Amino acid sequence: MKNSIFAVAAAAGTVAAQGAAYSQCGGQGWSGATTCVSGYTCVVSNPYYSQCLPGSGSGSGGASTTKVATTTTRATSTTSAGGSQTSAPSSSGKVQYAGVNIAGFDFGCGTDGTCNTATNVNPGSSGIAQMKHFVTDDGLNAFRLPVGWQYLVNNQLGGTLNSANLANYDNLVQGCLSSGAALCIVDIHNYARWNGGIIGQGGPTNAQFASLWSQLATKYKGNTKIAFGLMNEPHDLNVATWAQSVQAAVTAIRQAGATGNKILLPGSDYTSAAQFISNGSGPDLLAVKNLDGSTTNLIFDVHKYLDSDNSGTHANCVTDNAAAFQTLGNWLRTNKRQAILSETGGGPNDSSCLQYVCSQLDVLNSYSDVYLGWTGWSAGAFDSTYTLTLTPTLSGGKYTDVPLLTKCIAGKFH
Ligand SMILES: *[C@@H]1O[C@H](CO)[C@@H](O)[C@H](O)[C@H]1NC(C)=O
Ligand SMILES: *[C@@H]1O[C@H](CO)[C@@H](O)[C@H](O)[C@H]1NC(C)=O
Image 1 (cartoon, rainbow, N blue to C red):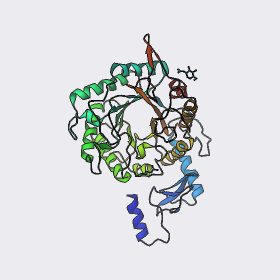
Image 2: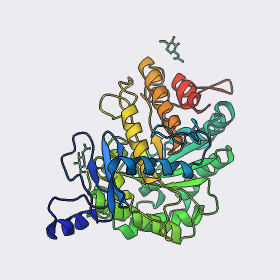
Image 3: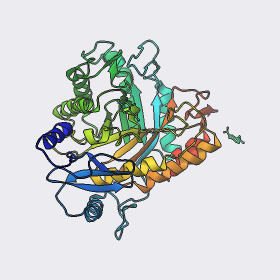
Image 4: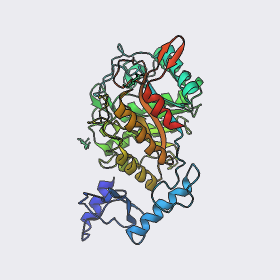
């Protein structure tokens, strides 16, 4: 949509190209339009990003300060009343949710959206016992429960939820709820795909994707501790078109009556927090709305690893991603939106990761008005040999956590 608005402005013969609604209009390295179409003003988010926002205020500097300041009134948390700067205008210094992924039902899912229903693993009673331990002994309160799309519908694209498979998955969901957790995230772990085809872009139709979510929403609408993670790590797709698929799922969920559940909206680039704004995901997903046109409980979903290539495959960490999370945090404040970090992690006892993961989570805490929290990757059916394991070791009826969990994932929540 923003492209067509841009085209209209250009065709109308404006002297210099003007930025479309919600498009980027400045920031380090930016060489595009620095003014906005009528009704919009270029507002500075941070040194890296300025954006065309509604309003026809005068200068960019004054408009920027005003914009940022108004976000303080929306704060869910207290303090910092006198804050006149963009830094922590309304952060309480502590996020609301922290926990881990309980993986297993996603085992066998590849980045092409194939999910082998013969190789997925039910985390079962161990997964449930882990959640109970994490809540009781570590004070954690949020779990993400990945599952392959194929498993839930027993390989019938567009079909009804398979009752036996759903019962197995639901057992984990109920275990999450009964652990005392405040947030249980249903995560469809399919990379925006089904067996190689991209949703709404040659693969499954938006209606088939919406059907899955309509059924899940019907099942879980009674409990708002359950959040709907629409899709794990979309990648290599058209972001504007993807936003329409996301909208189809949101509409289906709300129409099914799940009006109070949080819905997590994922961008492209494997949901990278660093690419969320610059590569178009954030700007396009801003247009996704509830039935009433509001964005209440529509939360952006982001991932970030700390190894050299952001892949989460190395045991050592090389960055705390501070710039990425500050840039995104400022953008969220400007746009009055929130995000959750639903995957992050590092080597479970690597000194570089103990340092960087902790300091990354410090940044999220300092933006607790816009970051709801984090779920680390990953516990559940992973064993102690997995590079990024957060699975506790059971011995003599007692769980022992890995240092990364104790020090950072839980430690930074207290
Ligand atoms: C941006 O998105 C395009 C299309 O999905 C992708 O090919 C490209 O790699 C992305 N760029 C970055 C920096 O992630
Ligand atoms: C973590 O690493 C330190 C330093 O190498 C080591 O002394 C300690 O035993 C390790 N802890 C665990 C739980 O592996």
